[in-house]
Length: 128
Image 1 (tube, rainbow, N blue to C red):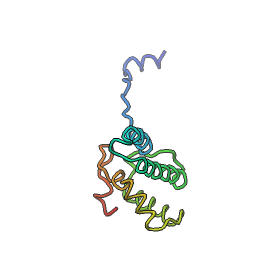
Image 2 (image 1 turned 180 degrees about the vertical axis):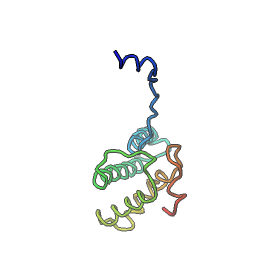
Image 3 (image 1 turned 45 degrees about the vertical axis):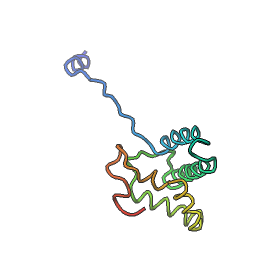
Image 4 (image 1 turned 60 degrees about the horizontal axis):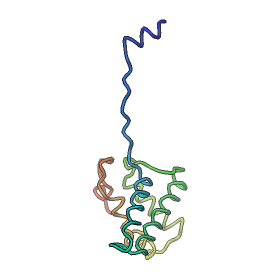
């Protein structure tokens, strides 16, 4: 009885929960958009390079953070540095491979693009 009286005095309003954009969900959505552009303004090879970048990001998140996805708010320059370290040291990729992953697939632009879900892009914090 007492609990229902308190509830009637202080009704609880349902809050609308904003869903946060996450890196992997964004990559998946972007990958589908790229697939539709093959032969129009993107080559199959470019599409595959994006897929390589996305797969490395997924493995990195599992290996480093034990996560399947991460919100854009959590991305900062240290995340980019850690991903670069992962590619260079743990995977033992050569500089040209790193450039191929970052440059050809524009991966640095993906992580540096200002996003409404994060206060500043990593490129505003320092170099990529």
